[in-house]
Image (cartoon, rainbow, N blue to C red; front, side, top):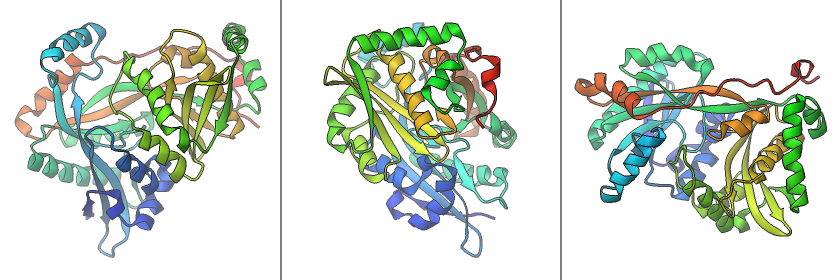
Length: 382
């Protein structure tokens, strides 16, 4: 039987106990990363962290959940999104609920918990469900959501279903398996159509005087980088949720020991864009992108290509390229990976209708695969 210890701030949690299990799972679950997220003051998040111990006091599992005001039509198709925009001019909170989410608010960590080998997944899911349901009922929250589950965790659908959760499609993620020694080798592995497309856009940026550099110390640029991110956020047509702050950028630079890095893009000496990166073991995560001005030009593809080059230079085995803008990421060789979320009402009587209602309000893309690389280039790097 797992015995839970519930905390309302990561700073209350014993750092060594937490990191011993969380950090090998993902840097995005580490004590340090959670402290950055909490101190950044994002949205109206309220966080809860749980250590599950055995009778001897050994940490057997852990996880985090949070309450946040969420648009329950967050992935609505364009016509419905436009209609909701009109309604919300008069009623800003329409179709927005405060709900509990189990996972990480900044990036994808699948599954959303860490455990020792002796503990079964079903036991962790059941223990966290009990805790979340108690919290949701106490705080008057209608919906509980566990996120995110990628294909290797498909087996977790059954234990979630036994607890009444609906297994629902979310926005897919994108990944690139890095198997090249240099950017030149990467470009050479592409089929001619995709290589020429990339080279065309790279040439445009070169002719426009665009250059970039990768840095670890970017705290002094926090206000500028956040302002650039806000430009992208406010013009996003596919997905909007967390709202970043300068403090988020500042603390990432100061507190992550070089694991957080940023690509800075200059045009004739002026900072015009950036890409925020996180080194997470053998994986490089592309967290966010920002721009000085919103425009439909070649700069975004150049940014995305530069992120791929950074992954090669850093020796990453895998690059997470994130949600949305699938076409450009696929042109660079990224594979689209489905994500599932588990959704449940905190009260049983309405739970049968939750999955149907969410499905009617939301629609997620499912891009087909692209053959970007030559057949001979698909072999693993030696």
